[in-house]
Length: 204
Image (cartoon, rainbow, N blue to C red):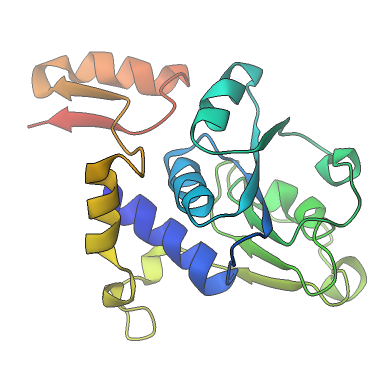
């Protein structure tokens, strides 16, 4: 749970987005396990995090994890965000459906990383970067499937530092629920309910 989620979040934030203390990060899909890992890392690094969720009942949880502001995820978020072009970096974990909206959000020289596909892999309709990408905005994507290749060695991620922070409670990475193998049906029901708000562990 910790290695995959935190290694992916760390690489998206420090590698693709090149985050710096004091920046404002828009984190779309913050209630996923990957989103929570990214929120933990970014808040601890001194970023001002605007987190999104489709469930208003989860606002308090995200604020407790370090978000300074929470917005409802949905169409046209770029138009609903107030304060003009004050977002420095965007980590989009929702996926292709929100990408065009995400690239309209950061200021010139800002960065956008597509790092998750919570909403599936439906093609982006009529995607024309020449007409739809904001000039001066840097876009990239990252998928955890590249870990272990020569270009993306896992050794680049400070996993021991991450685990130490989890152990000290700096990063809040406990699973939402732990089940024995005999309780696998209960685990399945919780997962399908959409109420898990994090990782579910089944012990063998």
